[in-house]
Amino acid sequence: MLWFVSMILFTLATFGLELWEGNKISTTEYYGFQNIGFVFIFLAFLFSAVLYPIIIFPFSWVVRMIANPLISHIMILLLSGIGGYVFFYKAYDERFIQEYHLNSSIAIILFGIAGSIYVLVDYYLDQRS
Image (cartoon, rainbow, N blue to C red; front, side, top):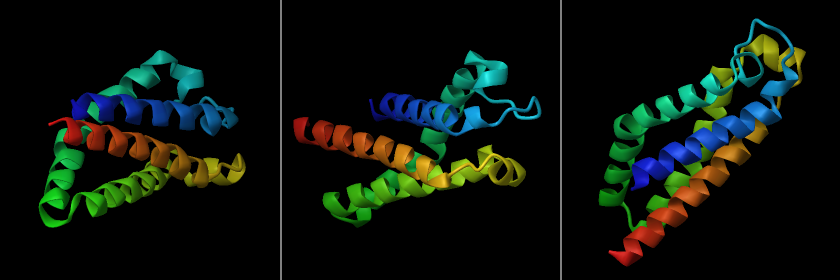
């Protein structure tokens, strides 16, 4: 269940970042939503489908084994924001960031919100089981 939730949240955060910051880039050199359309969303969804079993699930499983639930949820939330920061600098070239005045804090906020929703769903599912 969390895999699907993670894929949706990552895709929405990626799409939100693209709408907020990526639309500022007005060159055909960058392949964002303006240039490739819904293929961008499909690629983000596909990337998130691969990202969960390789990184997110093993990490969250290890954190749950080591720490109590509150600490593990806080760590997942913080790592979501850090992941947004890393994703921002991987998605946008340094030249684009400087030339179009892109702001990485938007990525931190959007991915942090996605992490918050993920933690809330995780908590809800944990309480139900």
